[in-house]
Length: 120
View 1 (cartoon, helix red, strand yellow):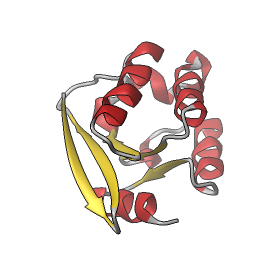
View 2 (cartoon, one colour; view 1 turned 60 degrees about the vertical axis):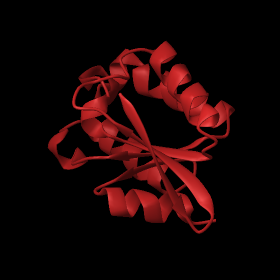
View 3 (cartoon, helix red, strand yellow; view 1 turned 135 degrees about the vertical axis):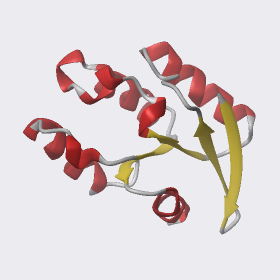
């Protein structure tokens, strides 16, 4: 796992770079929040492949638990990926609802993640 820092509009945004899943359980999400704070970043984005496939199965409650931690710590998060491939209507509804707010966003590119996370 590598954390790359971007600065956009004076806001430090961490990018989690990994070729394999590093967010596999709730504690991994909490560790990421701590690492991002340590890097003095206010927001973070990661790529879909850095998250366990179980995250995208809402029945496991992994997504809800991890995203709740990000919300509790007031850490804005964007996840970059192609989410249309997941057939679950409840997941698609969850993504759509998340994208209406500012705390958690699901986006299609790193550029979009930086744009969303650097906005007010």
